[in-house]
Figure (tube, helix red, strand yellow):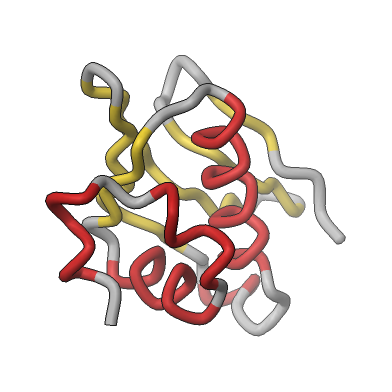
Length: 98
């Protein structure tokens, strides 16, 4: 399992492996946290890093009592597969979780 860091300056959760960085961008907007984009470089794909980024971001949202707006399709799918995070999704955006 890789170490996920919250890079506050870049507004993203990230995992660094050598020169490669996988990351999930976020933006805090009032009482919500928006996840618009997740990137895993080709060299790091297939290692479960995007899932670790999603878990870190969602745990942060829970800890900070923020409602989640999952604009990123990866976050949408992750929450759909992990219903324990569904309660975090902002009620106006539940339709994004299939």
